[in-house]
Length: 165
Length: 188
Figure 1 (tube, chains in turn blue, brown):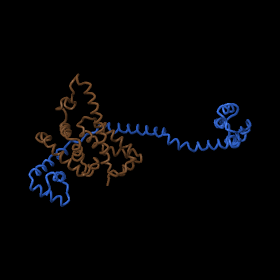
Figure 2 (cartoon, rainbow over the protein chains, first blue to last red; figure 1 turned 45 degrees about the vertical axis):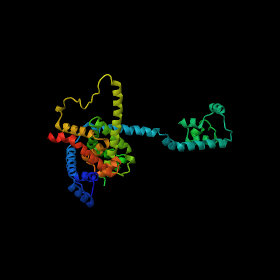
Figure 3 (tube, rainbow over the protein chains, first blue to last red; figure 1 turned 30 degrees about the vertical axis):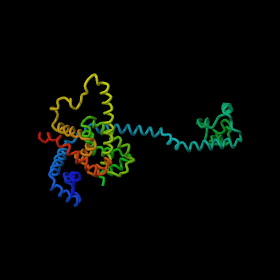
Figure 4 (spheres, chains in turn red, cyan; figure 1 turned 120 degrees about the vertical axis):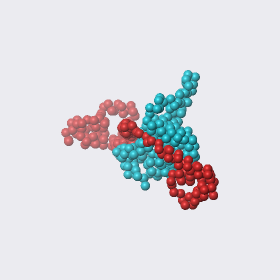
């Protein structure tokens, strides 16, 4: 036999019109037959549930959807910028460039057999000759001239490479 | 079977039109939930906007272990709780600063001329005020069941409690509401 405390949970279901497992239904029926206060509680459950279900639906302002769309546009935009600023993404995207530059540095120093320059030496030598980077910016220089400079460390003769397109 | 599944999958893949349709389906429910949980103390539409923004951001990680309806209710409960928490902190701060200047005024109680409002707004406010007097755990369970129409299983999932706990909170909450809703029944 159910106690009044135990009857509460199935009473809530009974008030909602839910079917309980057969054994639970039988226990509840037996309890209700003997317990006036739980019969009253069943009436209360039904009345309160009906009252709450009669709560008028909330109207949503016509601007709601438009405001939300604008907010979501901002979210998408902001998260797009965050994606660009994400250093992990950049690390991956720049990896091939880093590999090419490293390879170029190794090949250049390997071909010339020169000892690594100090910063001061590099600065001085750089004022006297063009670097790969300088050639890259020059739109009159062919790809072949750039590769040659990378491999030999020497600049092609003035006009020679340019003429060889 | 989740009736929203197709839309949810499309929205999770970034389809904004699918998400707009989900918003259309649930905006009324979510605004209603925010309003009935806070008795008008928090701007329900602002809360609902926050709910949908969070949902849009989190959808790619939604694994479909519950229905979308349960999931969006769960987000809404968290948003309303955090808005209420912020509001309570602001109120405490405001009251402590103005304690010796003017008495605190409840904006709900002082709303001008309620008689001019439509009947259904009066009824809704009366129900929401009665709900607001319940302890939070009972209020949530009763609102999800009787106002939002969720199944017991969904309520248990939304509140992250065993189903028996959800059942007894609903039972006790309804019992407590009886005297509070009595004037409504007599007034009809």
